Structures are given as structure tokens and as C-alpha cells.
Image (cartoon, rainbow, N blue to C red; front, side, top):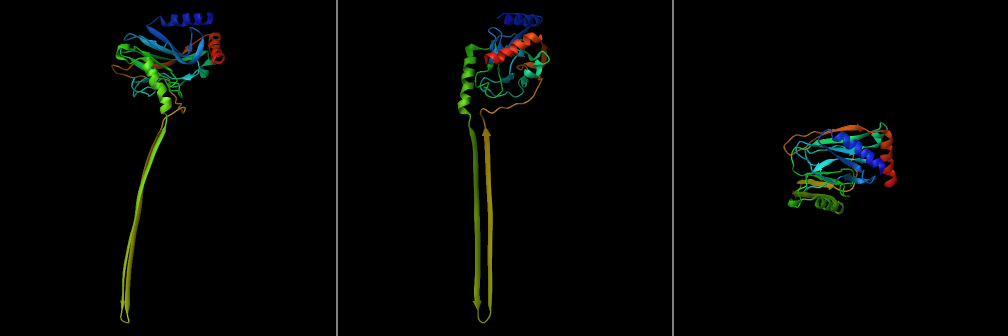
Length: 241
């Protein structure tokens, strides 16, 4: 489409001023389709280069995970926070989140909104196919989480009740009587429960930076877009969903 061509050329012209690759979140400028996806899903980035995520539709995130823990946020990893597009559309801006790639090790990202990750919204930077750790495998593992979403819990308790009584009665015109009764009642119980599944988990966040030899650094901002172009992209989100 002409709109896609013009807009892509304009944004790539801005990015070409520095070594920046653009990832479109929620919108594919090649065919003007919207959905739960990043475009492209795979990129190769040099150490020291930058990747800019542009959020065009919906309310998505860019969240880093490990390959072996799909759809699970990595401790101290990149987390863009939720990027609602409607909040920025009124100002003819779109949210962006830019990271710096420190080395050429594979980096795995997903959308933490609801079940978007399990439905395939993920991407990889510097995929190493020879290791067997591919984006296709990551997506397969992610999809399996939909079937594994269960609620577990345990409750255990025990209690004891003990009592004893004794008495003697004797008399020859007089009598004495005594009796004791003692009892204890105790009970303990423990229960734990964890829930995983499809529930929405919405948090806020606008910027994030990390340090380390294998951790990219990131920061959030907005990108000014001509209102006519922005409205076309937003309109496509509703027309093509």
C-alpha cells in the first residue's frame, strides 16, 4: 500500500541516521495488517547497535525471557512495561522503546499482555539455529503453556485430643474424692497455592535500563507521527482485526 510504503520510508529514514533497526509492534507495514505479532520476528543486530520497538496498535509489551522459560520475565531483563497506543494517538505520537545490543548472544522477547505470548507473540534477536534453540521451538513451548495452565493448592492439617481422668473414693463414715481431667486440643494446617493461566496482568512502566555483559539496555519514549498517518494505522487495527 502507498501508505505503508511512505510511512516505512519515512521511519527508516529517521532510523538510518544511526545504526538502528525498527521492530513494529502490533502492525505489519508490509501488508498493513494488525495483530498479536512483532514485525519482523527475527533480526540480526551487531554489538553496539540499537533496536527500536514502535508500538502501533493495542497495548503490548516487550519483555525479555530466557529460551528455556518462555513467557516468563527474566530477572533484571528488559521490560518495556505496557504501551497503550490510544493514550498517545490523541497527541499524534506512538510509544517507542529502544534497546542497545551489547553482544551477539541470542535475546528472546515476548508480549506479557494476557496470553499474547502463548498465542505466538514473540521474537528473537541474533537467533543461533545451530544450537537448536529456534524461534519456532520457542513458540511451540509457549503454546504448550495454554494447556498447562492449572491451579494447584494443598491443605494439610492434623490435630490431637487427649484427656485422662482418675479418682478414688473410699470411706468409713468419711470419704474423700478427687478427680483430674486434662485435655489439649491442637491443630495445624498449611496450604499453598499458585495460579498460572490466562488472566490479564496489567502493570505500568515507561523505561528500563540494565547493565551487564549480556544484557541489553533500554529506554522508552514517544515518536511524533503525522496525524493522518497515525489515524490510518489505528484505523487499520479496527478494520483488519
